[in-house]
Length: 294
Image 1 (cartoon, rainbow, N blue to C red):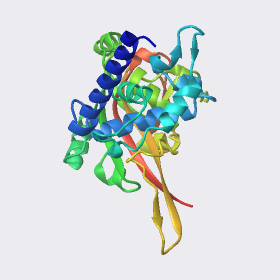
Image 2 (cartoon, rainbow, N blue to C red):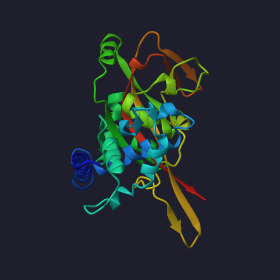
Image 3 (cartoon, rainbow, N blue to C red):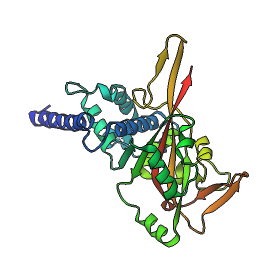
Image 4 (tube, rainbow, N blue to C red):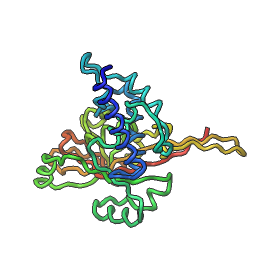
């Protein structure tokens, strides 16, 4: 390897390493809990990419071979395997260059996520009034499992959504989906291609009721090192408690005349089937932490 090439690789290693340390240790631009969320959803998508490759979009470009035009899944999984818990990454931590580069990509891929950690009951009441979602009250959400709340803002405004919203108005609804879909959802929005349900026709399915959408949101393990879901051992009861993550999206929906609406049950619940992706915009993410005793 020539000296200039070695110098370039050292520069990029130090650059990514320094940028990641600034994010993790100093909290620059992105808080730790948001880093944990991003990493957890990304790793879950990687874990399921063999069965559902569309979940792993966007894909980190540094793991794309420009010669063979192939995605290097094996190298990606090997790199994830050497990344320790984020709380263990300190100034003296040594990791391969690809690990630093991957962490930087996961943390900074264009997107704004804000963790709502203070005065959550008041925030939920405000959202309840703003969004006209009657079941988003603190009592309902906290009655089952602990949860985290995130506000998601796309990096590039959806001008088509805004134009349709001005013309037809909008309302808010819930969307439940398997955990592996949410890496794509937070970055690309809700896409028809991820939908597997067709009971009411083709499209993205939403519900007016949180409980209904939560039923379609499969909880599962994500990144084993995530501080969002840490295993616990109770020696006295000899029980291993594993924590899974489960996500439900709060979505703003264009109230287009062609939107399909179906009333189900006797409690006023509606299903909405949205055929066009540009009629949907992700607003918030509810992340439940579910304990399983083995």
